[in-house]
Length: 292
Image 1 (tube, helix red, strand yellow):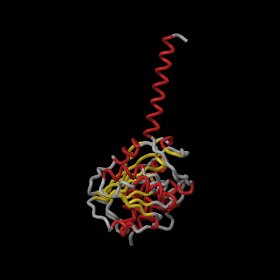
Image 2 (spheres, rainbow, N blue to C red):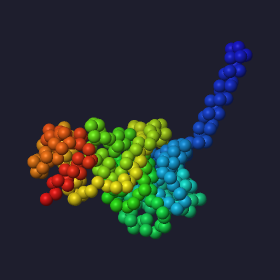
Image 3 (spheres, rainbow, N blue to C red):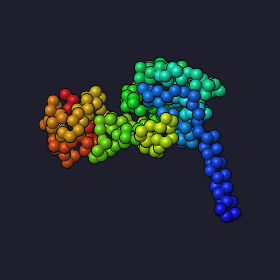
Image 4 (cartoon, helix red, strand yellow):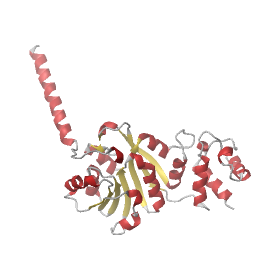
């Protein structure tokens, strides 16, 4: 090995050793046993959680709800930016880890209970705040139930931001004509303007999951389309997508198909159309027309 080659080798060795050193410094360390049944995959890098927290314009008089704080890396970042964080954690074995990670944050309250069974309105009544946000790296196995609980809570969330499995994010944000477009796409687009913020590689987690993720945000619409019967609207949408490969005539047999056809014709469709082609505006119009 020549002197020049040796010098280059030593320089590269130093560079990579430094790179690994700094990588270890900025990687979050966890002293926990990860539980697959709770979908526990914790983020490792603070740069990622800083980017998640930045999706909402948090201020010191705001309240943030988080589900599944896990190792508290995101919780810590949120606590630095807002007035209070209310976190729900189902795994009581994480009490010691969360206590250790959050001991210096007096504006964080952790409830060790199932968020899906919680009374959110009652839980937040103890806080004084100006704006309410939901920001979370949610457990992937209950992503849709969590989102529906948020919708059905009727609470005035200024913005909802969550990290979800990439495929789920595609369904949440899908537009008419997209193969991922489904009933949940229609429900969410009725209430929110939806935006895919950025992708997150599976390598950003420990343990490494089998899928990549996406951070997706939901901003409440200032004005909702008028509905005569909200329950009918939700049921109509569910029925329309009941059998994805079947058309509206087959999926909506129990409805007045003459009324359905009259609405569809106004938008250039007939009863052979599939639900995936219809916008939320058309579904609202159908629901209102079917009210007796």
